[in-house]
Amino acid sequence: MERGYTVHGLVRGQNNPRLTNVERLCPGIEFVEGDLLDQSSLIAALETCQPTEVYNLGAISFVALSFKQASLTGEVTGLGVVRMLEAIRTVNADIRFYQASSSEMFGKVRETPQTEGTAFHPRSPYGVAKVYGHYITVNYRESYGMYACSGILFNHESERRGLEFVTRKITNSVAKIKLGLQKQLALGNLSARRDWGFAGDYVRAMHLMLQQDEPDDYVIATGETHSVEEFCELAFAHVGLDWRDHVVTDERFLRPAEVDLLIGDSTKARTKLGWTTTVSFPELVTRMVESDLAAHSAALRQGVAGG
Ligand code: GDD
Image (cartoon, rainbow, N blue to C red; front, side, top):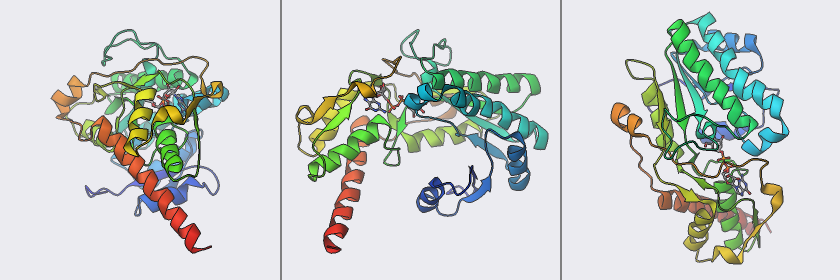
């Protein structure tokens, strides 16, 4: 929106509760009804908005949930992509298309670091569905000459991250523990390693991909990897606490198959798109902890003021 775009957000379902959140965070977005499960609604949405660019970030995106709702994940996260591509072909084949592919496609990694050429070995129904989304995007580009790009994004975080994901779960708990609102934080696999970057930087990369002469696929990553344990250590230390005094492990948060290590090589994006990161790992942890501290402190003050 800062770049002068009119932005339409696709909203599904009756009275979607997330609408209020998005309206609060990004006032000015125009909403249009549509559902990745429903082909005709996507065609109608495109006809209404007449977009020049479509960013398909829609998915069941929580890996743990995808094990419990495997076929729904396939429908939304996988087949949803072909429905959107077909809608574009029907309404206006010149619309530029961005598909949010994921480093979860690398799964049980075949090589380190992972590049655009690394073979996929997904480890969850979510990862499998994303592989379908990736290849159908490449296929529509090759079959119909569509301007369709796949961004293979490694984990990207910010203070807007949902509480179910490990980074925000940690920073939110750190804030509550610091303020005396919580005592312990229960986590699953502490040794999993991720390449965590700042979401704002990654959104710039998505936009850059659609401004090139030719469509292509790009890995977007920081090139650093850290464990969940390291994330905890930094987050607790930021408020003067020792993570070992508060973190417990709980097997309910373990996954049937795990992705142990992710680290991306984004040389292609850095060279061809001129893309760079602006927020380091410690800065990312700090800004997320600070944001949760501010929110919980404000809520406490209001609670006290209101009796
Ligand atoms: N969520 C969660 N909760 N994860 C935990 C926990 C816990 O209590 N304890 C350990 N973990 C580990 C997970 O097992 C995983 O190895 C790692 O922390 C990160 O988990 P998430 O934050 O849930 O993210 P993700 O890596 O599975 O997936 C995210 O990044 C992908 C990009 O690689 C999601 O945003 C995906 O949609 C995205 O594609």
